[in-house]
Image (tube, rainbow, N blue to C red; front, side, top):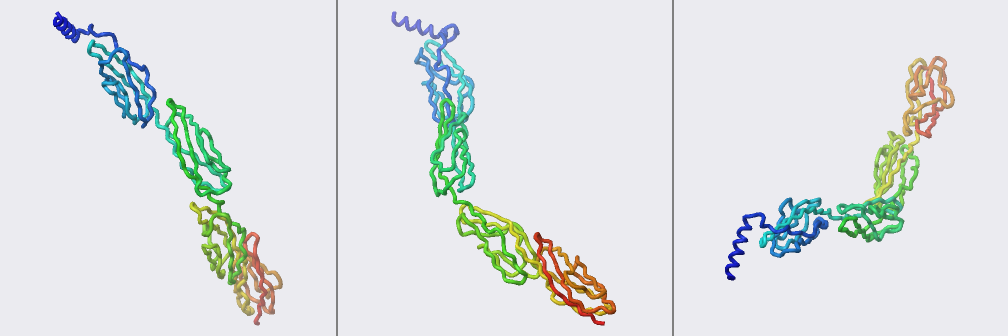
Length: 377
């Protein structure tokens, strides 16, 4: 009698394998929704069906996020998702005795991992500072805090942007930044870094240079303050008058040559800090104009007279004038070129006069020289 019942049960099960009407009611799957996952973070979520134990699980449509897998025996979704985004898939569960199935469609959101990159750039005393850490991933808006900032600096609680003007120097000031997002689940990240606050930037204190006379030895010392010594001086634009040279220590030496003229140039000073601070300033080194001709040749009546008066220094072009006295009759003087022309007339006599030359600088420099022209009959 007992064996007959087993035979009948076997026939019933065999028949249910053919007729769909033998399927039992659907298996419920819980939970109905999945909590969010975080990219690169361990994820564990158990799926259950409360009405059966002899079951098998599978993803019947779509795909789990890369990095996650479904255990066919336990229904556990585990792993570390590697791709942020929204992932749709369907999970099925099957029971064989009696024959029952269940399905559940899921949308699993993988949130991008919250990452804080905190590498403050160097600051400098008495100079405006502006640094914003890099925040990626998570779900904005963010809440940021920065600990350990020196006097003169503050931060924005939504971006972590650090601004202000530090008031003293530091070699290695430890700061700690942290950020939290508004996601579910909420994420947080923390980073520590050192802030270097350099001393006040070097600045040039020399405002002008003394004049340099043609042919005379010249020495001038450029001065600067703050920063970190030793300083190094160099040209940014222009050059010194011919005959002068700039030493890297900031000393200008030499003697202006006859070809030297007034020059405007830009000098830079750089300190020994790392990174270095620098300053620049435009200078004008005046080489006052000077008349280089000291005597004039004698003139002869009726013979063309064409010497010129030499000039050095100053800032060309020059203008000339007869400042005092008179020229011998028949001789003219060109104020644009400083050249004489014409021929002494009969009866012309020796004359003493003063020539003045003025350059084009602002303010101009000028020079005078007294000459005598003898007239030969």
